[in-house]
Image (cartoon, rainbow, N blue to C red; front, side, top):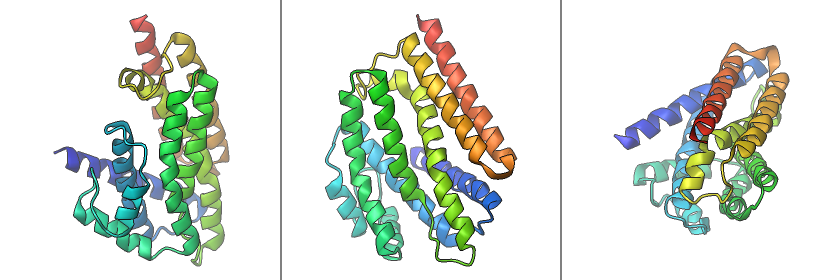
Length: 234
């Protein structure tokens, strides 16, 4: 049941990226969809390995996936799909995927952060790495559109990561993922950063697409609810 729920969420993310790419003039190919889906499956597994198992050395797991071998939270069929996707990538894009091993570095930096400013800095640094991984192949007739979309992805990543931090801060603190106490002051700082990043992303989005505006509204609502929850607990 959990696996099916996760797969559904991954497909929703793929559809969202497809909708966001179209205003740039990108003709999304099936290869792009398969790539994104595989990346989301892998990133979910890596997140669980780091957060749930507290295993901060994920390089061996990435090497296993590249060879089509299953790892915790990623079954054999998905691992094989990742291997097929990986083998079809250019050397440059393969190098980007290998950078995923740095996610554990950011997990350590966030855990060791003693103030909210450092925590935010490490979170946004990780968002840039993830945005690089999500970039699509530019060897296509819509070369310029794909490059523009890839250049925009980091702004989406910063907005998404900042918003997720607001939403997840309380649970992350309870689970020992961060040592930053989710006080009202902390939430205020996080919320300001999230709102600023969402605004920047919307400003860079072509034609102010309805899907992006709706997404921005939903994210701001989640941030507001998290802030209200924090106030009610104090």
